[in-house]
Length: 134
Image (cartoon, rainbow, N blue to C red):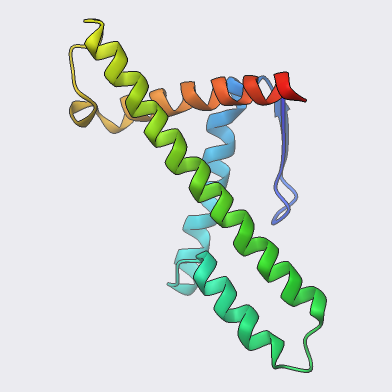
């Protein structure tokens, strides 16, 4: 089982890891799309840290706000790192499948939907491993 709680909008979902992985990804992508559409600025760890730096010099803003900006930047970095690792593992897995003579296509030849399916599989495996270590 995997539990997910979005602190931005209070969205919450619980279920088997492989069942909820796509919903979680879609939810997070929606936040990303909404933020870009509203501001035209992609929220990155660097942008958050720049805002935090400016906020440190504004006496009207609390230390808690500055701390939250840093925590948000760190969370984004972890998510980006996780996604990069998932992409790497999905490609490694597909290469192994292809070398075993099952796939018949190289990673670069897969459709976005096929790549998404591979990533979902990797997420499910990682979630199961995470469950096992708790």
